[in-house]
Length: 199
Image (cartoon, rainbow, N blue to C red):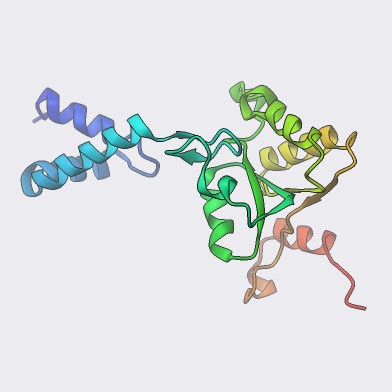
């Protein structure tokens, strides 16, 4: 037995979400249609409104309903610090720590020649324009500790080298509360390479 074309279309649409396979998409679609049609309408309306109204902050490139997001509009932040991230969710993670008071720049990805993603796709030209204004004194590269993330950080560091701006990289290593015997070799190697003096 196969589902009707509209149900199949809904299942296929749900599969675009990360981590949702065919069975999960089928379960979601059938639940909404069988048990919670009002929630399905709310979901459809929220999706439509978000797609119509959420755009990109003109300053940092994060998702925003306003031309300038709330963080970029704030005058209480440290304009000399700029943290470069791969995605808006990374920005949210750092904001939730409460430990960073500067501004952000969101790349919306990482360099990946295999996938055809180059510097122009990441807005690195806009990043450099912002840095050339002279207000930023330190760029913190907080791209993911993947091969692509490291390559992206290295590329940006090379571009910034010509400017009188300090470039730093977030530390990678052993998590707080972690035990060495359970840490993978790559993480331990990063932790050893990034060690700092205590005296």
